[in-house]
Length: 201
Image 1 (cartoon, rainbow, N blue to C red):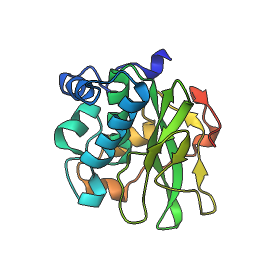
Image 2 (image 1 turned 45 degrees about the horizontal axis):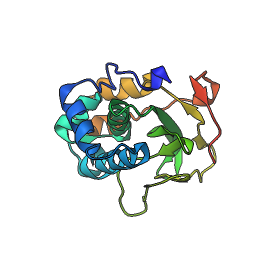
Image 3 (image 1 turned 120 degrees about the horizontal axis):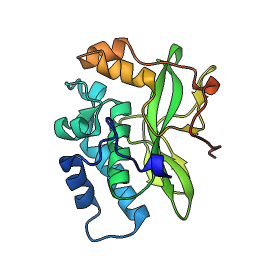
Image 4 (image 1 turned 45 degrees about the vertical axis):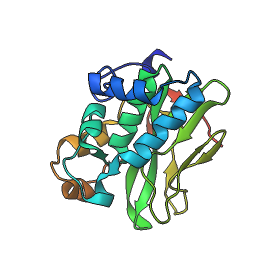
């Protein structure tokens, strides 16, 4: 589990602000499921989705997502992973490949997996709710933001310890939310080797 607890460039949970927020969310509880629930709802509800709110700057590092209070789904997943890891809870990154406006082209969508002792790996999506999107924390049942409904869409079973290169390229090479929206990351992850490969129900 070491790689899913590590602090890194983009999941920088040892940053003082991230560590402070993680400790605040865990206050008065030693129940890892409860702490994971608090972290999930904080990121889902308190960090604004960049495109929904047309809010700059483009963020990538967990500490920047927290500082600016905004991020695309990928960036929000980096912050959620950081908050969970800071509390000693293994967490990784997951991806779906979805259509844009219900037809090709495709783009990746970022979410998380957290390891809960009583449930094992459990996926959760802190993208942020809006009409038609209702993600919740209700283990062992998954309630993600998006279902796979269109031909060619994929729900990847891998869990990544670090952000995918396509995601980093989109977030680091564009300076506005509009530019990212025009260059959303895409990749066929089914052909790639991942650190952990699980089948989620």
